[in-house]
Amino acid sequence: MIKQDYIFLLRPPIAYPILLCSALFCSVLLSMVRTKKLSSLIGLIKDKASQSKAALLAKPNIVSFQLALLRATTHDPHAPPTHKDLSVLLSLGKTSRATAAAALEVLMDRLQSTQNSAVALKCLIAIHHIIKNGDFILQDQLSVFPFTGGRNYLKLSDFRDSSNPISWELSSWVRWYAQYIETVLCISRILGFFFVGSSSSNAEREKKTEQISGFFNSDLLKETESLMGLIEEVSKIPHCLHLNGNGLVDKIYAFVGEDYLSATKEISTRVTEFRQRLGCLSFGESVELVCALKRLEDCKEKQSRGISGNHEILLKGFWGSIREIRNLIGESKDHRETGKLDRTKSRMSDSGRFMDQDNAKLYRHSVRFGSERFDFTCKGIPVLGITESYLLLK
Image (cartoon, rainbow, N blue to C red; front, side):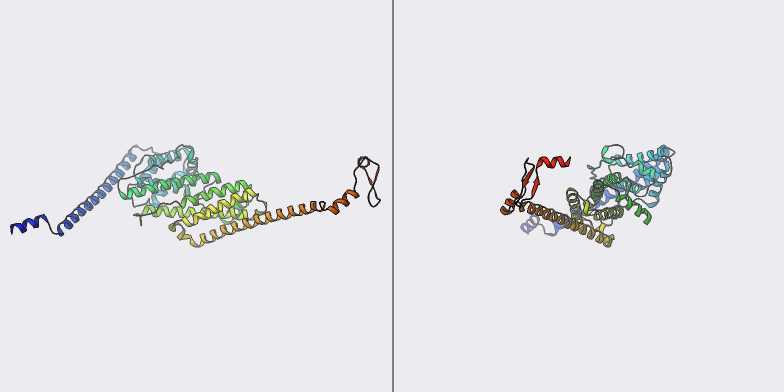
């Protein structure tokens, strides 16, 4: 009996390790839940402390903006900024330029000083909202070219927040979204206006089309390629592994989807203009346009379903027009090359007539160049010499 008990102690039942693993898993899960609750509590405390500090120390002319900004950029990794708070951010667009500049400086400081991915994403959403819906004064403060430094240089390519798995995944969204907004600012600088979020009437669209018709081919190509940069940037949107239903990500999808549609409309306007110019495009311009359209079509396969699904019918027509203009450029190029070949053959055949021996012999006998007053052809018809011809011309 003692021997059997000894063996039993040496070889415990299989249920013991299972219970041990289950207990360990529960303790880890409980620890994660506690950590998540603790981080949420810490974030809430930070938000309240920041709002209290702003209420006491903020400049009187931007205190409402700063409080609205802090409410819109909390540490909650799930809730996006509310429409009310974003609307307050736009209110300073109706004030002086100095006040708007001070407000945007607060926004940029909030973005570049935070180490929290949720706060950074909400700051980027606020910037994007100003680009789309802000008044001229606010937009003008964001119009500084982003790659030349200054307050508007976002510089978030190395952003990392490893506090928890959700924050780590949101970090990739911070890096991509910052690059995307810089791309929007660059394109707007090239076009001369903020093309995202602008709803224009038929008269304004006709006026814009008329203006585009006066562009040089090189300028039209430059604008078209810059707009294609937004389509390429959207194709690099991060994949969501644990962010399904996340409010922040859904908000970004909504904003980017509207920009995507605006970019396709602007590209369509310029591609339609290129259709009218197929006959006057140089070979180099045709090649450059075809390469740009090929890059654009490559993005079709990479586009996110979350972006294209809401506008599938419109985008189907857009991609069809891109494919059509590509084919037309190819046909026009082939036609011009065939015409050049035919003209070359025609010139070769004209000169080849004189290489025929009989014709060449007849030509040599029928026309003689000399200094004599009269030369006689084989038919006895006098032909003036060079000297006489020069005198007659004089």
